[in-house]
Structures are given as C-alpha cells and as structure tokens.
Length: 362
Ligand code: 7PJ
Image (cartoon, rainbow, N blue to C red; front, side, top):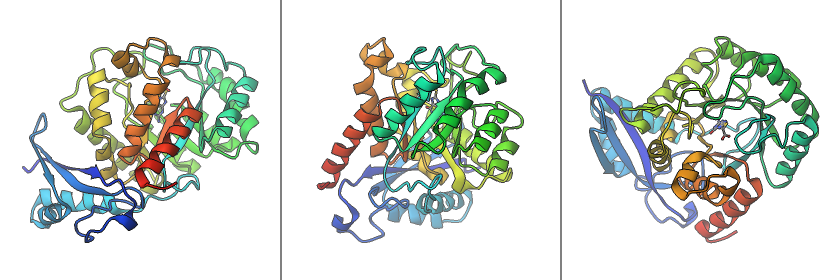
C-alpha cells in the first residue's frame, strides 16, 4: 500500500509572471491565475494517522516522482493535472483575482448582526451597501449556523430569504448566492434567480440536495463541517485536520460529479469554525493552498469567527475586523479565489493595497 499522496503549492512568488525570469519547468504556474505563481511543492504521503512523510520539492522533482510506476506516481500525476487546469468562471465571474463575497444575514440571532437586519428591507439595503463597497457576490442566509444554534423550519427560512432575493434580483449587479442546507430553499431561490448555491453541509444535510442542486445547473460551494452546528464544537477530533478535511471535500466533489454537477461548477471551502478548535482553524489557514489540488476554486470564510477572538481577546465579533482582514489576506496569499466577509469595504481596501504592493504596480 502506498497510502494517500497530497501536493501543496508552496512559496508564492510575489512578482507578476512577466517579471519572473525562470525556465517553465522551474516556476510552478499551477493554475489559471496569472498572478499566482508558486516556486515549490510540498509532497505529503500519508500512511495511516498523522503526517507520515513531508518533503519540499521543486516542480522538476515532483514531475520525476509522478513519472514513477505505481499508485503514488499516478496520484501525483493526477494532482498535477488538476492543479494546472483552468478554473472556469463561477456564475460568469472570472476568478483571475480574489473575489469578495459579502455576507447578508437575514436571521434574528445571527453571528454578528444580531437582529439588526431582521427585516427584508433592512437586509436589502445592507446588501446594496455591500455591493457599493465592492462585493462581487452577495451571500444571503436565513438559517443561523452559529455553534449551538437551533434549527429553523423550512417555512421560516423561506419567509426570511425569499423577499430579500426577490428584492435584489434585477436590482443588484453582484451575483447572488443562497446560504442554505435545504433542497427546497435551493430550488425556490434558483427559480427566483440566484446564481450560486452555498451549502455548509456540502449537500449532505438534505437527502434531496444533490439532485436538486444538479437540476438547477448552478455553481455550488461545498463547505466542510464536522457534524451538525448544534453539536459540532463539542470536542472535535481529527487524525490530521488538513488532510482529513481535504479527503472529505474530495469525496464530496466526487459525489457531486457522479450526481451530474461538473467539477467546473464546484467551489470548495474548508469551513473555518465548523467543528474545529482554534488549533484546527490555524492548521487549515496555514495549509490552505493544499485545496487547490482538488481542481476547483477555493473559498475562505474566516470573517469575525471566534478563533479571532480566542487569538486576540476580542469577545465581541464586531471588534474582530482587523483580525478578519488579516485572515482574508492570508487566504489571498495562498491563492484563495473567493473571500467570504462581513466587512467588504475594509477587505476591499486591504486587498487593493496588498496586491499593489505585491505586484509593484497598481
Ligand atoms: C461560512 C458559510 C463559511 C461558507 C457561514 C459565519 C457562519 N459558508 N456560512 N463558508 N460560514 N461557504 O458567517 O460566521 O465559512 S455561517
């Protein structure tokens, strides 16, 4: 048994490709993002629990490894192909630079807006303000998935989100996304005109979701969560959080492809805070570029989450804006395609300056 093989792009080269004077087999141009170039790969081989073997290799050496006979070589070759594959636009949005998804909560008990946007009109106004501030996508959610939160009935969730979707379709220029675990909410939202489905259960919570999502033909965000929101923060355990989350998302990508949802319509998200301790969240942030090996765009949602409070002692989520911006930039550095945030203006400003500094021009 050769065990699992993983390749994590490493060492982002922070100058535009035109300025990088190196032979093509030396620079790791991993996927169709002109601005994202890595200079090495970490080859991870897992035999049972833990890390087993981790080695930092050049692209040339990884190609040599991929050329060897046997399962490890074949897995490695398949990952290299997926890394280099173009990422199709999502809902017509080119992913040639980091995109911002603004969070529109329509819940009386949401993480951080606590009832502030409970009414449809307030949520619509908030969404339009986020668009003004530079959101490329508006993510509308009517079910609080905060740790320990109670379930919301289908009727109640529809009552919350449908007026907001209807108020924004045809009015917002940004793409609209529905954050739900319920197949019927997906179906109704799709009929009303949303462009993206975002499911924190990766289409597993509702037995009908895979089929309904396939029928809508919309792009789908598959987020990893360990267990149900009500109980997920009770002592979550992994053998190796980065590799376990990767394996789980790979299995969901394959289930979707089998159900007729093409890989080009899928986005993966490690699900920061969903059945994860602070230590787990930090391992996922540090290893984020591993998820590019799934051959889909990568989303990161760290905004105002409790690990930021745990690290910095900011008990109130609204005090976690600087930490959230830092987490978003760390994701962008690792090539994350979509950043899901509450604070669009702050994130947009930070990204603009960070990119200009990285590239040496505006
Ligand atoms: C996420 C989400 C996330 C995706 C929530 C909160 C909790 N969807 N929905 N990724 N988080 N794709 O906003 O803090 O991280 S709800």
